[in-house]
Length: 283
Image (cartoon, rainbow, N blue to C red; front, side, top):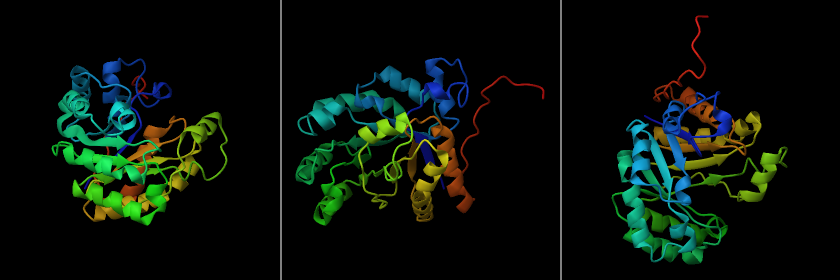
């Protein structure tokens, strides 16, 4: 029984000297992060396809059971809106191939303008996509949540190819007015998404964003502790990503979420122990 938890990135300046050693060469930063968490969102691939050589260094820094959820490039999802991009997808899949089994899912994050009327485009894309990979879809148009027929149609399309629907839970973020500059920025950039806790596959993926205040973040994820505990009891293998507006405490929060679930399921496999950050002393 294993729960994977992680953050939106593996390298943040505010983590240096706290969660990971400093200074630390770029080629060692993922390795240090992987002592805190056993999964990570691959957001940078949205902006540019990495080289195979770069991806090979990611694999070299992580254990075989580490999970990457890698975002498809915006040219595929946002610019071409899933149409006429077979060659771009082939090039991308070739680039990330060195991850092997670490590539847990290809993350199809669709723009807010991608509405239920566009569901056939998603169905056609998934039908063409190689079955050698798992796919996870994040939609942001309110019609997918407000219209029962649209919800059912999307679930049917995803179910046909065993793809997951990724919830992006922003309910805690928007529960009360922002109290910091980072929270105010998040309010302008993050979508106001309805809460959805239904898993479609045996490998559900959750994206949760809390607040800069730890107690508000923890309070806001209680329903996810309940849902994830139940998924594990059902034999599912979930992955949960913890965000906050500044992400300053994200690695520790991810572990805290794991601890909360493990308190209910003591048989859950523990996370690796973080490496010491500071110099060793005799006392």
